[in-house]
Amino acid sequence: MNIDFYLHALNSTLQAYALKVQQFASIALQAAVELRSDVTVNWQWQSPVEFTALQATLLKVLLVLLLGTGVLIVWSWSVYGQVISEKFVRPSTLKEIEELKLSVAKLKLPKEHSPRI
Image (cartoon, rainbow, N blue to C red):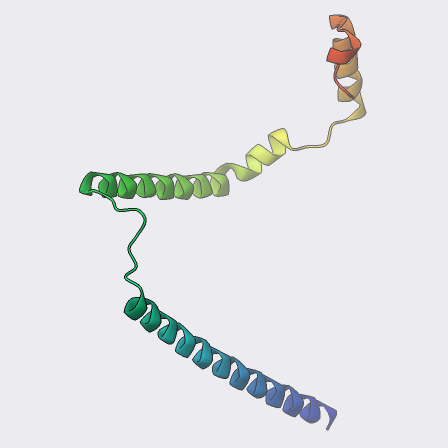
C-alpha cells in the first residue's frame, strides 16, 4: 500500500512538473517570436561584422582545423591517457624526494633559486 501511494504521488508530481515546463516553454517561445518580430519591424539590424568570401572561407577552414584537432586530442587521450597518467601523474616516493634533494644540494644554488621540496 505504501509503495502504491508513493508511486501515485511521484506520478502526479512529475505530471505537474511537466505541465509547468510545457507552460514555461510555450510562454518563452511566444516571447521570443514577439521579440523577433519587434526587432525585425522596428530595427533594421545589421551584423557588425561582414565577411568577404575569402574571410568566410578562412573562418570555415579554421573551424574545421580546430574541430579536427579537438577530435584527435580526445581520441589520443582515450587511447594513451592511461599510459600518460601512469608515467607522469604518480605519487613520489620518499626515496625519490631524497634523491632530488641530494641532487639539488650538489648544484649549490642560492636560496632563492633552490626548489621548494
